[in-house]
Amino acid sequence: MDDYPPMATHLETDRLSLRPWAEGDAEEYRALITERGTGTPGVEECRDRIRRLLDTTRRTGLALLTVRLHGQDDLLGYCGLIVGRATREEPEIAYELFRRAHGRGYATEAGRAVLTQATATGRGRLWSTVRAWNAPSLRVLAKLGFHRDHVDPDDGRGELVWLTRPLP
Image (cartoon, rainbow, N blue to C red):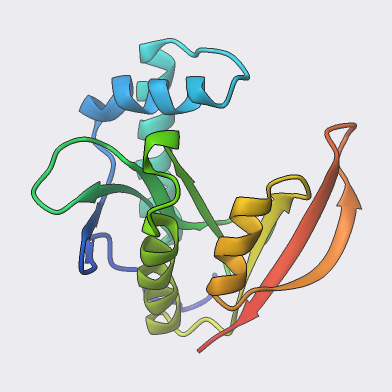
């Protein structure tokens, strides 16, 4: 295992607070997953997913954090670093927001905070994978300084665009 320090799990931006998940977030997490249109998991399944996310943070030092407006409890979505399709040494940035939070710059703002944390851990590069049809997400990544690396087919679900960003 390499010697990267864990990323901070409490981040603040001008408008946002990024914090670890809590099991009490299961209902809101369920609603976010449901909004994808790929099915509705049970609340207990969402609690299990949250437990796994927290365990992964303990094991890897990478965190997928909830995103909320300062002083508000409503979940806007999440943003953070994951192994995903990449590696612990060069993790992926991942984010997803409720539709009601789209178009306000929250993903870009949260992403910048996560980039700062990735740099603080000493990493030299991040990845992101996005479906080719997801133009809004590709715009966010462009604002964060990511550049297209390559494209792969993705099991009949369309093309998967791999983007990368050197750090710092």
